[in-house]
Length: 268
Length: 283
Figure 1 (cartoon, rainbow over the protein chains, first blue to last red):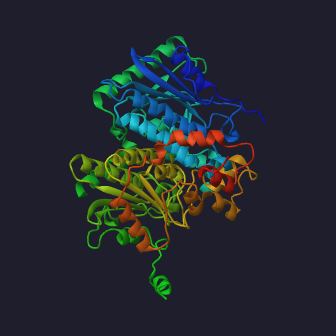
Figure 2 (cartoon, rainbow over the protein chains, first blue to last red):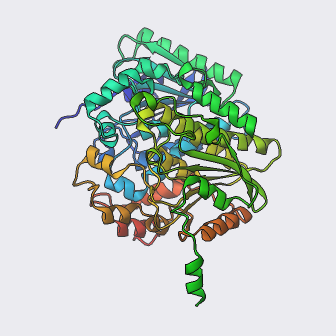
Figure 3 (tube, chains in turn green, red):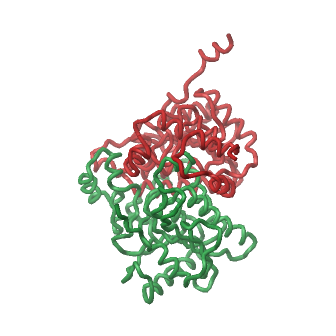
């Protein structure tokens, strides 16, 4: 079986950081690069495929044991380095993650805890005042996205059929819900949170911005300049408006999420 | 004889529904449920799919006291849609934790207990379930700065998917022998990775890797308690009395990266090798 490994995450990471050197000491699947955004220091992080990953179920860019804990480390370093800084540096998660790693080694060694290490790092960075931005350039699936991107203050997605957010791949989702893939797709067309396309996802109000680019596989020129301008705008917006996740609750398709919070507050 | 008496008077926690569990833990007379079933806040997504919604969306949230301390308890009902979290149930948990954190900023030391029986995201509300779980996780990390957020996985559903990550973010985590805790459900691993990797029908194998006893032996949870209402209640109060100052497990990347660096990942994993690694007695 030949699987074409996505290089989007790596390509965008390199383009956004002008090919700056990655921080040493991380596994080959976790690239951590210190560069700048809009003239301010920023740390860029991507999880990328590593065909030689020691854990074979994490060799296609999945977020596995080493990846989860290493993300936690990359974020803790930033938090510690800026502990006394007046302006906390920005973190940009470049997201192209096909899934969490599905495997026996992973479950046995506690992949849930490793992914919690990553979530913990992103959430604490946000709470400490670091602007955290996720840039979706490929897949952002399930536990992998929870660990790498979903704690961001602002989520920016590129408009492309290969950019996809979902809780589970179609085949597995069909199996778990006792449906055929055809039935699943028919329902997804009517129920926006079940859909696999980016427009449906955008209707949930979780994205801060979407951008079209001409060549998503090869970031350069105008594409790169517009994405960088958008990320810088997000950075400035976070510095003005604060670091919580309230900006995600505005869409009509999230009316119930707002209503629950209003009623809880009234009854609290 | 006293053992026999204890046995005769013990009351199973696992057999209780979500609402009964909350009532069994909070101080007598202190319970006040928020958004109870009469509020009729149901899932807006299930009925269009021919699934009967539930008036509490399978999540019970109550305020009260625990040993006299202000507390909020959220319990997931494992019997409704496999304990899966959709938009409303997820918002109930996240919203309650957010308000508890706000209490703390206002000088009220509200702590939280999460009773987790869940397969994770409700796939019928896929992306809104995932978003809600991200918000639950954010709120756990936020509240944990001030007060304990104690997770309890009693069983029989266990705790999987994004909510296993949420469990792993809690300041303290309790399990019973009936609990399982893991990221990916056995069927999904089998679907994605094949039968040789993970046989979802081999129950002893799955329990040996993800069961409560193994997770405790590996130090991936803080307490292994009997399936007994009094035992679980007393352990919760003991934690609140003396929460300790250990670094939360989800911050221990240095230790886990060191251990994983020494782990031989070539052979397939088994329970004994993982115990040996995490108990620190592997050469």
